[in-house]
Image (cartoon, rainbow, N blue to C red; front, side, top):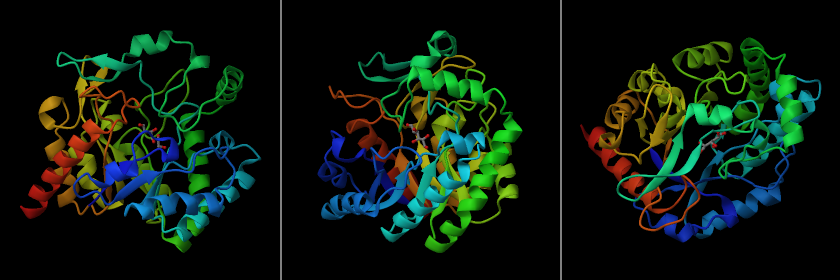
Length: 342
Ligand code: DNO
């Protein structure tokens, strides 16, 4: 495995030099920010980002995310031009040595939480999700600091209306159409596409969500067998759905999992959860069994510690501070080393 760390570009409060000091850190997971969704990422911008990473001895082999335009998800006539732009971005990223692109196919909203600073008894804070609270929120005014994009209230209303006609099957067909069109760019550059599961993995505000568990993985591989069509295995997203057997999914698809986001969850009840750092002992997911299944299944991809808590007085970007993610990285180093040497 290659250990990586998410870095939000120049505006990130965490200096690349600090990331480099985390033991065994191979590189960062980042993105070109500020280019409107649907437009081509210019070579110059990509190269500038890469030069910053190079200067600190960090690789830039994983991008999270190249966002997918809503017209592609909606299957609108404008999609072909937008997909051609996406393919151009893939070529430009390939030239810069990128090997893996993380993306998602969630309509309108990316990940959803209701509390960004839930306090634990030890004084640390973390992200949490309360289904009832979310349902009462103003759907037109949702923003999260870690999202790659967000829309105005007006745009959201329009989009929700348009999605009214889109069933789960239709959304899936649109995903397959998109993937088939970009596979030639992936074959030419060697870039692996790694879809991120829906977070949490169930429908939201009447909007369909389709990457929710093992069945979705089967369907995707069957529809687009090309090896460059693969997954970002996110334990926290898939783990929110209690019926997902994470070690089983990790083991079965290990060779198609190009990127793993690893973090812990503590279930509060059937739908609600609080994020809990990374250790198995801190929550409900068996992180040890998951990593073991990945390693034994032949996983050879990128790993990053996912959302951390805010600890030691840090007031970091929710989920993306330095300290707890660095602790998570060290824990993952130990787990992988022990299991790989077994
Ligand atoms: C949240 C992240 C997601 C992820 C995108 C991938 O912390 O895991 O925002 O980056 O869904 O496209």
